[in-house]
Image (cartoon, rainbow, N blue to C red):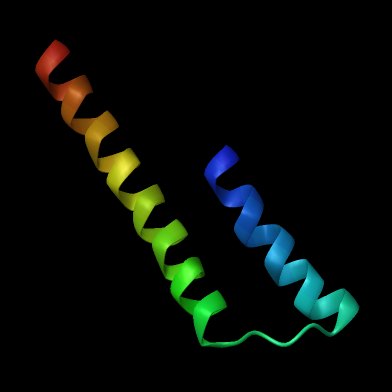
Length: 51
């Protein structure tokens, strides 16, 4: 859950403060989203091994 915090803060700043989202911010958002997927996949793998 804590991995989503920077992304939600960025999206709220775009909506509420009308901050522009440049190319670097999009790359950062994609990195955050990919990290979330990688961490969730590793957790599933560990659970399957322990069962």
